[in-house]
Length: 81
Image (cartoon, rainbow, N blue to C red; front, top):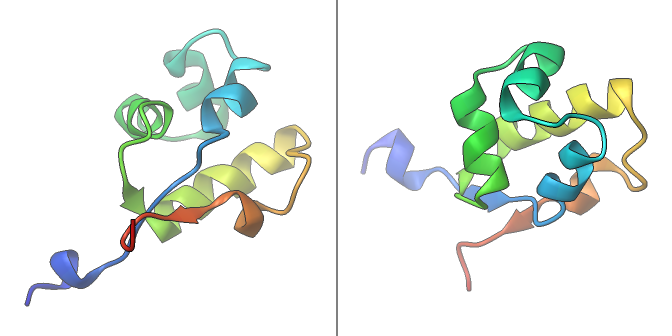
């Protein structure tokens, strides 16, 4: 099995609310968080992404704005749904 298929996938249900409070668009959030707007669009749409990507975005956001909870608590594993 390829590495990509065996990798776990995760979402952050609160992502849209966390980002919308501080940035009016994915473009502005991407610039502020130093990432690709397509990754932010996936997170906003609750499309599963790699855990490392999600934690990276949450930590970068936490560095600029309080999340209200530790980043690890905002991550939801969807493999077993």
